Picture (cartoon, rainbow, N blue to C red):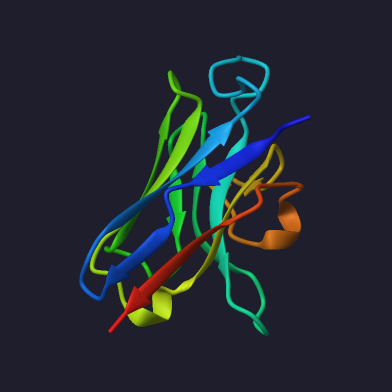
Length: 133
């Protein structure tokens, strides 16, 4: 069982930066048996579908970003700390949402991590990010 715990959300003004973290309870990054895990960040606002923001294939480090955050957000992993990060720069009010961490071994096609929520089976509880104008 994989447990994911997000932290680091908060309020920031437009143009500012914020970093959210996801602590992984199972030490899955370094095991040769599970180097094919995909981890991702999603976000959701009330009344809308959950949107994929960024994903990373932990074995190769390959990443995928949504067009709306490309160049502003960076997903990264710290295998020693069992932690996934999402660095968010140049934040906009439309980035306001609950941000969720997700993981799954099979959310990958041809080595590219996916951003479809249906492909992820493990989820955290979310952390709120609010960007004011």
